[in-house]
Image 1 (cartoon, rainbow over the protein chains, first blue to last red):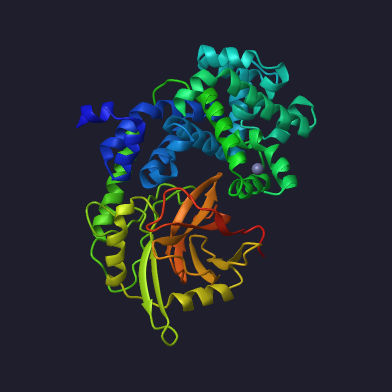
Image 2 (cartoon, each protein chain N blue to C red):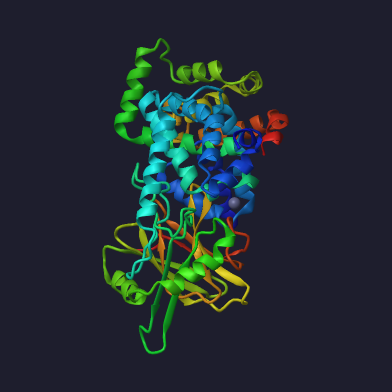
Length: 190
Length: 277
Ligand SMILES: [Zn+2]
């Protein structure tokens, strides 16, 4: 059984989960919980809250696996999307934001965007890092502040001293550019 | 998709994919996504890119899995405890999803060790008004093979008049009424969301019967993704459905008998809590 599961595709694991197979959930956890935790922690700067995100997400996968639609992307992409959404929800609650700001202040980098930039440089793979560095500086900053900083595009606009509409379209065009550059890697995941 | 709306929403898709829009904008995007495949495709692409930015290998801290496993056992114990079919209407709660009470996964009731997942309700209420039989079978389509089991559950359960409950809810100002409409064809239905934000009553007003191998299916959009709230049958009747507090956009499609995991038909009627009131 175990060895079967270890070889199963993610899609088959989700089918197993839909049939209330706990071992299938455990295998999905083994594959993806670390990434979910890592992303939640980078957005929240708080280990306990990040653990909460992991727990919530896998319980939700257990109770509502039909929310995952294989046609719209890989399971990992789905889980990371959920993790980011949940982490940002938590961050929008005042106390979590305050805690994060304190953690940031205690670190050495202080200019808007630097924290996010460091975080991403440390953790993403080479090809993703290269693609980010090839973006126009302002697009890269807007995306990093929004995604890793958990800031709304309006907040990003304030932080960067740019019009909201400009930031909104920079994020969109930057993501489009990344999609083109990362196409070889993305095609496998979708 | 009207042109203005589309381009307005389109411009938000990047920020939306990064969870960087405010709640009103998120709702507007979700409502539009329901009807616009091209925006859905663009969003999917943005999300895949975003997930790559956020993807890094690492380990989850020890102990988290143990907590998850403990929750599963708790849930299983609850399911076993309620495994006999009571005389009173059984409200089978769907498992917790977004916005559900944290740490309280599914007070699921089910009839076997292999629990019927997401069978939200199976209630038969008969003889409200003269000759009016209201049959409700709500099945979130998790496994389409559950159809016959749901059918037997319907006949096993007899209960209160759903219509009177729906009426009571409609009269309560603390509840939210959502009008589900379609401009061209004139189909109509109403969704009354109970003040507890977890129960809603689907009341069809003008929904023609479908061919026998088709069914109406009710959906909500959660973070841009349609989530099934249940299968309504080929002749939709007043039905009780379970919703989550964060659900605001609702729609009905026609699907193959038994329902589908994701909508395949066009949206027949739709509405949102923000548009109501
Ligand atoms: Zn559109």
